[in-house]
Image 1: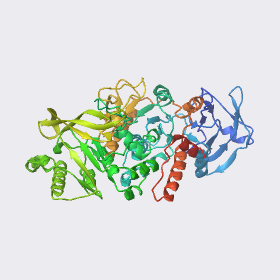
Image 2: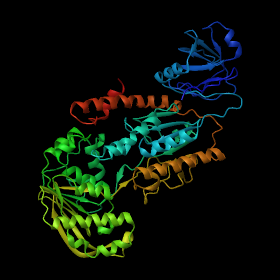
Image 3: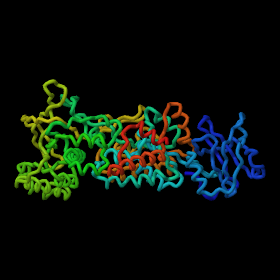
Image 4: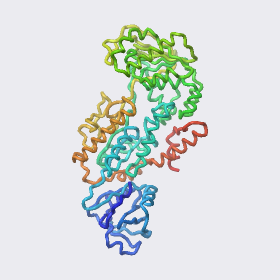
Amino acid sequence: MLMRAGFTDEDRVIVHSPESKHPLIGEYEKGARKRAPGLGVPWTRQNFHFIQTSRVFRLVVCSFRRYLLLTEATLCHNMSTCILRAPVSKGFSLQFATTFAKKTSCYGVQRLGSTAAPQPQVCIVGGGPAGFYTAQHLLRSHKGVQVDVFEKLPVPFGLVRFGVAPDHPEVKNVINTFTQTARQDRCGFYGNVTVGSDVTVEELKQAYHAVILSYGAEGSRSLGIPGEELSGVHSAKDFVGWYNGVPGNKDLKPDLSAETAVILGQGNVALDVARILLSPLELLKKTDITAGSLEAIADSRVRRVLIVGRRGPLQVACTIKELREMINLPGTQPALDPRDFQGLREAVQDVPRPRKRLTELLMKAALEKAAGKEAEREWSLRFLRSPTHILPSPDRSRAAGIRLAVTRLEGSGEHARAVLTGEVEEVECGLIVSSIGYQSLPIDPAVPFDLRQAIIPNRMGRVQQAPGLYCSGWVKRGPAGVIATTMNDSFDTARSVLEDMESGQLDTSTPRAGACALHTLLKQRGVTPVSFAGWEKIDAVETARGREVGKPREKLVDVRDMLKVASL
């Protein structure tokens, strides 16, 4: 981020002032070393390039292969002379210079000579897995690029923090990799900045050579059935956000007073929700589940969870790992109907091995239940059912049940289609969680968006008809796959950006100000960005609170609390 070895006498020192629309161009000439410290350094507008510093006129310069520290500089009215209030100090080491720059929020110094190219400035919108994997590949592959990650919340890591189930800590180990990326000198993190309102995409395009949209899927697919708006009906996104500490979901207060809960959808997220509802409290107490949701689950009366799908056993969307966890969950039993699996033993012989293993595990679980295995709580996969109505309570204030249409399959395998038979059944329940898919939303009118597919139209991550705009992750391909899928997808987008830099399709010959161009703008709009150092303060507080109660962390769930800790 800060210095590179090998500066020569001819290297120029360039400063960009966040308080001015124009860069302040400084050139430390050979003759300047003959002047007495503190008498000033000449400035010029010629041959300028940018470096970034978030504090006006604070910089570290390297000249004659030594480090000179210029501080508290004041600019004269004619912008031609920089008067130093403090002496120029010599002999600082690179380590000291780097430490100083980090403490004073300097964001970059590049070597400037007559043949040096400007530093490519890349902005990533979204601090989740897609954003950090894209940043990681760019930083590894291009030794000069500066990457800044903007995140709406004060905390990074997106669905790794807010989507991965609390009892899956091993999946969250990827945070260590993301942390290494964020701590690199050429990577900046700006939390608490909402792109689209705090700053527009067009403003980002003016400040950066490339803008990569990696903001994920913040919406949920609608059921589109009567009663969906009733109390007691929640999207899986909101329910997961509630127990994982998403600030916007902290006041959800799901009704857990009824014995039966229904989950619509049979993917991994659906099984996560079922597992959290049925897990023994002693297991959850050892996770990073939020205090409020843990308290609510402790008082829960839910003893039966139905996981409903439109199609059959050969089309369930969960993985064998998630299914095995449900089957082995202490204090619970699967209630699977052996009739749902008739004829499947022969059919699975011709399907891919992962599907075969998953179906065989389902059949085994169904037979064990038939043998008389008993437990206090139970869960079941209800196949060939499609929701048609949420049934209200007598006073119509909340959900009291759900009407399911019975379906049958046309076709076979993964492409089998569910069609209605005309039969229906009703299930009494107090909690209904819709887990039929996340959905990306438009971020800014300037960004093309396919409303039907709920993605940004792109080719290999290049946003169509929008030069300089790229996308990665779910907003690029839709909400599917696991973290490894997102990693490969993000690497592909990063390669597209690098290819465009190399070919000249992405013009990096003109210097861009990067984060410095946004400093004053955000300040004027009352936005206080949270740096990665600010996040690490939040992290320290959360882990300390967690140790007190025997948990990995106790998450802060209020943005105001996060900002307060980050500013300490």
